[in-house]
Image (tube, rainbow, N blue to C red; front, side, top):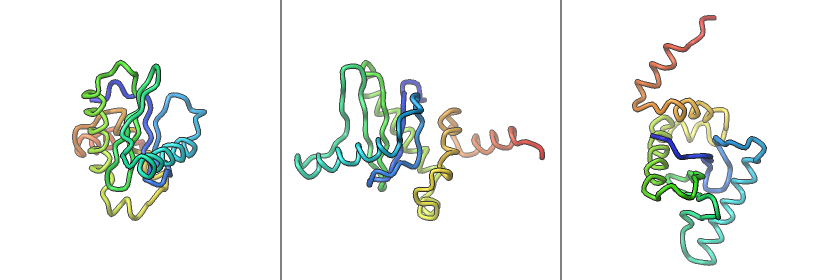
Length: 142
C-alpha cells in the first residue's frame, strides 16, 4: 500500500513530532515540526486558508490534519495526487487504528510510545490481527 512515500512526520498540530520515518537521519524532527506548524498557522491567519500541500522543483509535501494531528508526507513530484492521497489516507487510518484516542490521551507526545508504528508501516499490516501475529511469531525467547 505504501510505495511512493519518502519521508513521514506525524505531529501534534502545535508542531511537536511524535513519529518520523525519514531517509535523512540528520534532519531535526522538531525543527520540521515547528516549521510546518508555523507555515500552517501563517496560512490560516494571513491567507485565511488551510495548508494542504506544497511543491518544490523535485518533490511534493502533502499535509493531512485529523483529530489534532498533522500527517506530513514527502513524495517525489512525479507521483500523482490521487496516489499521494491514497497513501496518506492509509497511514492516517492505520495510525488511529493502532493508537486509539484513550491511549493518545495517556501517552501524549511521548515519541517512544509511537515508535512501534514503524513496524506497522514497514510491513503494511492490513489488520490488527496481522500485527499481533507478526509480534507473536517474532518475539524473542528470554
